[in-house]
Image (tube, rainbow over all chains, first blue to last red):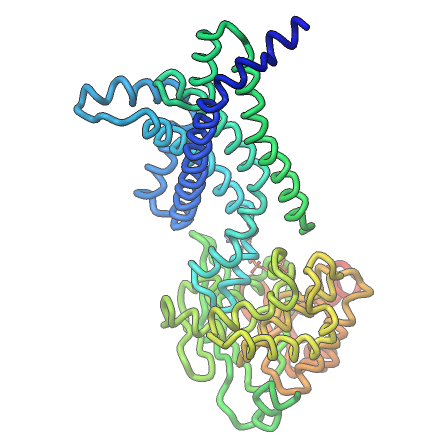
Length: 222
Length: 262
Ligand SMILES: Nc1ncnc2c1ncn2[C@@H]1O[C@H](COP(=O)(O)OP(=O)(O)OP(=O)(O)O)[C@@H](O)[C@H]1O
Ligand SMILES: [Mg+2]
């Protein structure tokens, strides 16, 4: 009984449910933008890198390396508390989107790039020898293979980074963790945190399952 | 079916060369790999290139469609300068030069049909319907129409290579380049690919073939070219090259091949 009261207190649940639902919506839309923008930016950077121009490659590699090396929390704090000193005021959700989207882009660029480099030279030559241009060979032949190879690591990385929306709690973004931990301190019950865990499961478990399905679907033997 | 593949064999005797390689030179850095190669292939002719490993056969072939950039010399296709083309013009020129690789290089993420259709649609700008018709026609030609919906990984090596040949043929090339098309195949699959090549020759396709299949050269080649150390050492009809080799280098190469050493 003690366990149920601590983690599944019905009254507490009912009280904080509306607030938590709106936090779920916030987490969802921030995650969605982070994933879409991060993957798109990573893809564009990997494609630009295939052109083999140093003035493109250099900043892309620098961005990818720095984005992967810095702890996101540090960057979030700098953006939220440091930038206003320069007169740049970004809202909490905006900071979260910029930083997490950027970090995902850094990892995605590396994953797409690894996929592109593992497409054999013969594939490129077959495309070019049949009269396809560089761009056509990239988009029709190399990239689809790179993307399929990259799906498992991309899904893992996207999951890991969208879960970091919980870092929004340090800059007051009303996402799931912020709302549930403040509810926990007000109510003195751990129930809101249980609700948070359930909410995270409800969001991310389907994604994990979907990634398994995708992985099997694209597992074609070469 | 035969009419679909140009030109007709009767054009063989009097026409200008379909493919003309003039004074072709190629260096990688300071290493000279090809030295002043002269070679021409008349319409409908099958020219066979032999030579020891590292003699520059692949490099020469790859210079013909500029997968490798020649260091000097010119390549002409049906009188047009391949070596002068850049950018889109080069892509267009490559449509007329079919190439078959040792490693097939089918696109693993696309079905057999899609493999044969891709460049027709994207490079030749054929409609999807026309490209599909042509693809099926070419797959029938290589005996694989029933595999149109398969993925490349579901095919044997010999079948994959025949699809690769169909993919090149579907673009109506003026010449076909083959770089050791059967070297990666299990012995029992070699015959099916050679059969397709023989059939192509009978239809009058102009072909430049690098291969170690000496039997095939004897039967099907109009001319055999022996390369060594980046130069053409000897060339002539197969009877001469195999029956009466002149240069010591060719003699020793042939004796090594006949002992199964190459
Ligand atoms: N990209 C490259 N960079 C440097 N050297 C190269 C390159 N490609 C080929 N070579 C060299 O050029 C020479 C000729 O190579 P090539 O592949 O044309 O020979 P080949 O006659 O086709 O041999 P094989 O029968 O083994 O296929 C070799 O010495 C090879 O090492
Ligand atoms: Mg070779």
